[in-house]
Length: 184
Image 1 (cartoon, helix red, strand yellow):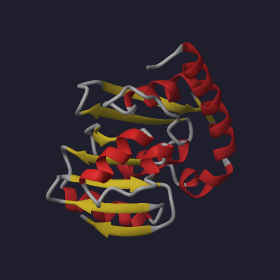
Image 2 (spheres, helix red, strand yellow; image 1 turned 60 degrees about the horizontal axis):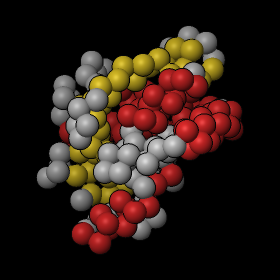
Image 3 (tube, one colour; image 1 turned 90 degrees about the vertical axis):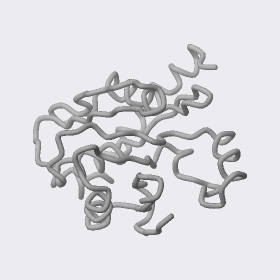
């Protein structure tokens, strides 16, 4: 259950994380293309929620926008909200632009609580015990207007983190951990 205190704590963490992440985002941010704003659009396939939002404007992350993204990418199984790493948002923004897509990211899995991750891991050894989903550093996605293989290859070419390819499940995993690749 989300309490007022947990929402306030998450908001404070967003601001702190965004400030701390700025130097680490230099390589992606330098090539971000839009000097004045960065935007993302999501379609959460499990909740039906949609969001199109400018999350970075004139050199700064927008706290309210980050909170909205955190909420949309919450663990849909139990409602837990967690801070999504701004580096992941910048990776998605860059990936979307490189693909020239006009579609929102279809979200299969954003944040996962430790309880949800443990349950999924018990069902499938393909779910990492210490998944970056639990840290708000990973997302499983697809784009309606781009071939899954193209999404996968473009994410790999960016060399910005981990990339998992799950064609039988119709999604690509991207994260801002170390650069690595795998198939499922």
